[in-house]
Each structure stands twice: as C-alpha cells, then as structure tokens.
Image 1 (cartoon, helix red, strand yellow):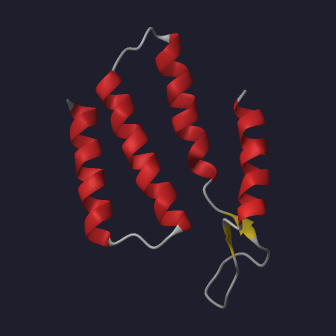
Image 2 (image 1 turned 90 degrees about the horizontal axis):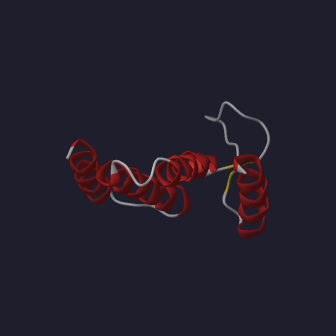
Amino acid sequence: MLLLIGLVYYRIANHYGIVDEPNQRSSHTKVTVRGGGILFPAAVIFWWVSTDFMNTWMVLGIIWISTISMLDDMFTVSRKLRFGVQFLALSMAFF
C-alpha cells in the first residue's frame, strides 16, 4: 500500500512541479522530487488504525510536523511559524 502511495505521489509531484532543481551548491545533478517523506505519516496512520487508535496525540503531532514540512517543501514558510508548529507537534507527541 505504501509503495502505491509513493508511486502516486511521485506522479502528482512531477505534475505540479514539486521538484528540486540542481544548482552549484546541490549534491545532485538531476531534477529530484521533493516531499517523499509523505510516506512516513501514511505509515503512521496505517499503524494507528491497525492498533485500534492508540497514541492519538502522538499521531496528531506527527501529522502536524508532516504538514508543515510539506508546506515548507512547496512554499517558503517562515522559521518562526515552522518552529511554532514543530514545538506544538512535539508537545502533542509527548502528551
């Protein structure tokens, strides 16, 4: 299931231009798709459903971090906003 999600995301990212263009400072030489980390929250949600919805706060925190990271990949997100959301998400995960 995660492989299928990854393949679908790859096509969506290529279609909408969620890619990283290489420059002089890049370690890669070809256009690379960004946001592949979307598979991690998908795996966590599958785990969450299979364990009868255990650790809901932790899962919500992971979703918050995934969302702000994906938005940062797609757009420029201010450091303060990103740090605030990450702090909130970490607090939720530890709760």
